Image (cartoon, rainbow, N blue to C red):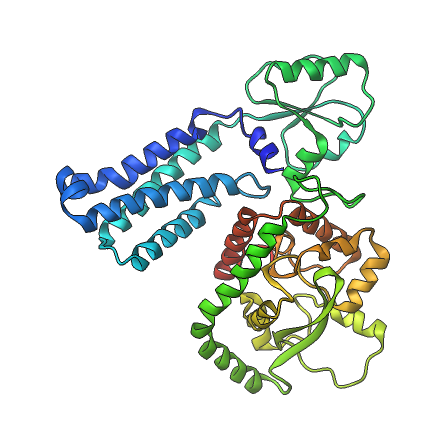
Length: 427
């Protein structure tokens, strides 16, 4: 899927050239400022801390560009939206590497390298975005009408004539029976180097969803996600918790005290959720709602499990905890126990999950990966309760499973951080 998305972006302006972007950003962004300030001999040969910082800035810039370009193949990513998180992450990783290796460094040189290289790359992508001219020409027949309202610049072909302008892309339902004249036009388009895509790939690239009319294989031709990545992801999940837990213990203890002072009831909320491979587990969260006092039947528990953002049961402190997602942090225990991951489809209450299984085809397939504290559906759609919205949410979950990768996890993490820090966006 990712490779197909890259092809869609193939016929763009020179500003999209990877080589040109890297050369301009690393040389004029990371190297030239240090040379102008210290001189060539000092910056590159004589003074080791400056040399280390220049080389580190160049490496971080290269990693930032690769990351930003890779993440940009996913739908819903504005061309400029992924650049700053990518550069922050790449410069952070290189800075940690320099500290671990105990190399000499210059904070001003490293900082200036970050600002100038980021500015140059942003300028490139701004010009590239303005020069994009992609037009999707749709071939009539089959299920092509599904592309009608997905935010693409589309034109319907009325006769089998090949578009001849730069940026033309042809989209057809390649599983439909087209007349020979249309088939010849599609073959000719491919021979002429004009991109031809099956509507399904374009729909998924534009919406970030996978249709829930049948199970959809991933790029390996399998229903199983990338198992190597799943194992590495499991190790990374646990490692990150061990890294951040010492710094979070005191703030989490303070939150626990505030919850006790805010409303009567336990500090933690425990609920059985449907987890990895449809195995129920007990999720652990900070309590954000008032405690129910009476015994409830199954239908009532299912209804109450659908929590809206303006639910009157939410406490004053609970509203803040939910907005900032602090209430989710105790789930680090679930991650350590192997029930969850940092990133994946959100686990539903068992009562809701069983109901959705009865109402929505293939719903169980979302449990093929570990559920997460945040996920693709959360950053695109936010909290939902209606059955029709759940169907949309499932399409986002299927897209995540089909495109299960480091890069998609990075994008979700960056967009989640944006929501938490700014308070804006899906949640």
